[in-house]
Amino acid sequence: MAALARWCLKRRLVVIVLWLAVLAGAASAAAVAGSAYSNDYDVPGTESVRAAALAAKAFPDQAGDGYRVVWHTDAGHEPVRSATVEARMTGALDRIADLPGVAALGSPYAGSDGARQISPDGHTAYATVNFERPADDLPASQPRAVVDAAKAAAGDGLQVEAGGSAIALTEKPDTHLSEVIGIAVAAVVLFVAFGSLAASLLPIITAVVAVGTATLGITLLGHFMTVADFAPMLGMLIGLGVGIDYALFIVTRHRQGIRAGLPVPEAAERAVATTGRAVVFAGGTVCVALLGMLILRLGFLNGVAIAASLTVVLTVAASVTLLPALLGTIGPRALSRRERRRLAAGARPSEAPTGLAARWSAFVERHPRLLGGLAAAVMLVLALPTLSLHLGTSDQGNNPVGSTTRQAYDLLAGDGANGAGAVGGGPDGAAGEAAAPSGFGPGVNGPLTLVAHLDGAADRVASVQGPPPPTRPPTAAATPA
Image (cartoon, rainbow, N blue to C red; front, side, top):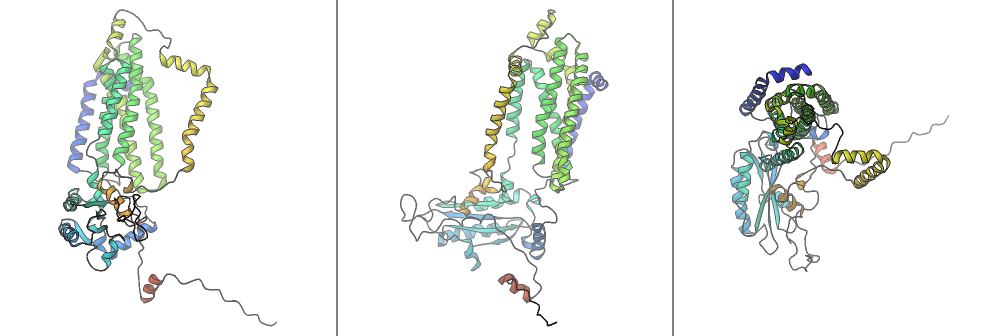
């Protein structure tokens, strides 16, 4: 590690240029190749995968991902069967059916089967739309055009929303605002702790360069193996956390060396030779933990494990190569102005720890049992909600309230219908025995699809009537000896 640090310090300009060249090259390659992430979380060999394959073979026009256009009228307005609403929505659905990428459309106004797509109270209806390809193969412009065509029919008491995996593509944020806020907060905290702008920016710069290179590398990795669409976000969060943390360790040790009177190159070399070893070991343990996902044998997690590990490897590499080069570049400015003035005057800092952290650590050492018991009690209190934890699969009911997918979800379930079915009722919305529930009720957003291959008349009868009741096994007749 010491030899590596010396090499990076002597050739710090080369090291900085090489890292920037790698970042620029990855950005150019990612821009040319584009992303190829996957949101297919199917587990091969399961019954659901076999059913989907059988359905895609028998109904190719429904092989792509679908979605629903949902419209709703409030109580006091015309029901969805009225001529005005039907004419408006039929025109919108015709325009949607003619859009590129749309394979099939099922309207509630077409035939007797469509009547099932109108709620019992008559104020909510939906149309099913299937795309030609799966959602992860669709350009974002196609579902966006469908949403725009559906939304154009809204107004005058008519609410129109769209839901489904394809529509969710139109709601993905284009910016990383949360990461920017986190980096800004980290920079402020580091500046307060160090008192030096240059020293506070070094961990940020190191982490951003490493994580940026890794994120672009994950984009390219998606062309060679299955990488889930959430892998870049996971890698970015892990990379920023460990990257800033690892660089902070080295910068802190480097500052201690300068305050002790060591020249800048020697202080940086010792920091990397000591703390850098701990950084490499810590990064290795994180990679081992992440790669443990490979033993689960879930294809979509393999890409996640490798992508996150790649991010950690690059942050460690940047911490022990790019960071020493930057430390050599800023020189004594790693210290605050006050510390540099004291150092120039010949003052040496006391080796005894001081400050709030030192006083708190001494207090903990004096009262280990009391504070250990309090910490255990706090953890137990925080863990109590797990006793009533109910696990489930995330769906579009977890989306932001204002999103069109969440609105469509609530309208179908009846949670978003504002007073439908309450005509003539009291202030609590009850309309008596004749009132029908709004929407379609629980289960409509999680339908169970049954697929069967029918070879003959007997199979068709069995698919309608269900399996026959179990028969009683025959008893053996007793024979005389």
